[in-house]
Length: 118
Image (cartoon, rainbow, N blue to C red; front, top):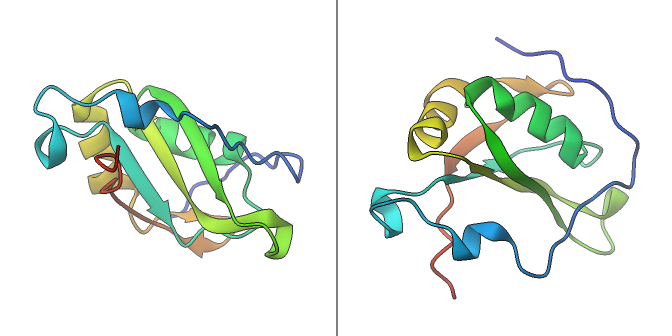
């Protein structure tokens, strides 16, 4: 059940020094209330606007980031992080957007486990 995604320009990786998922957590904190999800198996050519457009199917996306990996094809690590406005939207993304496709690749979506590494 793939979704069509608008193609963006290449090279529009976003790499923020202080990503919002480090500072903003859901009401329960830790693994019980994360509003942030990890998205894996992305094609290296997927841009953050494409990912954000796709992930909006589950709710209000506050921030989206493709994880950069210098020295790889198009500078991408092939995964990203998405911060939703609510825990409910993040849960919906995990439930409904796993196994959907972006640029012909099935993605997986799980809770972001790295947000507590402050």
